Image (cartoon, rainbow, N blue to C red; front, side, top):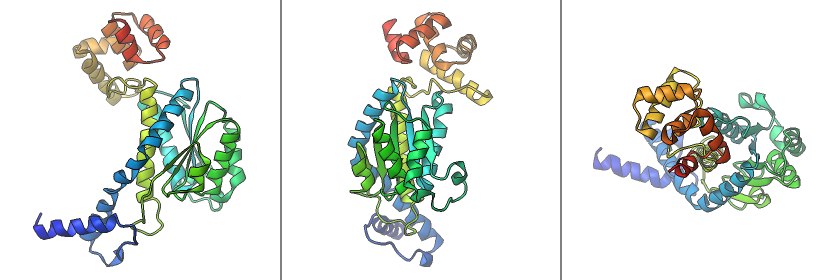
Length: 305
């Protein structure tokens, strides 16, 4: 890269992080446009950083409830709702849980692929959708709205608070009604979008970052990993079975043949196979030990020395 190119990219990065409207993007070259968008995205992690303390507090509070059987429920409209449903749908295959993280979107499943006009403005529908889901005091409801004022989401959060659920509000603005209504208000100042008002861009990126942290951190606290290994992953196809063998071998130092045999004996449950190798317990005994430890593999291993 030439010095002139580097200077140009620095200028684009500065403009991308500005709080004032951006350049006339239809006058930019393709090279400058994609560089501007990339530079803009590079500012999002910095925008999320000030919210980390409240995100941490929300994870801690949510985990306490989930240990007692509660759920993490995302509720949003439009892009915010789709991102919530996306994150919820990725949790089961990664962490081996069902119906623990749930996504609710204004307008129902059809809104995942088509805009459902007016759905986000229906406050009563937000409350009704959470009532239909049976949200209760052990659940954590995360209302997601880039603007921080979507009526559907506010209605859902009000219902959640009324039944004793923990409430979290995720917005991409500061000092929002959603942030004020929630027990934990996560507000990320992403600034103006490259395409003005298109919250699928910077706000969408920030939202996905925060949801990644919320779901992953809670699953880690619930014992769904061992080190960085996703030991509750479903080994549901050949690719994932090969991955499971690698994980067992890595976690235990065993040969692949030993890891494979342990997985077969454990019904291809990675965590259980690791426990049998490292503790010498039978699959049934290891399963009982994991149950007593709340599913936390490290606890079982440490207890067995």
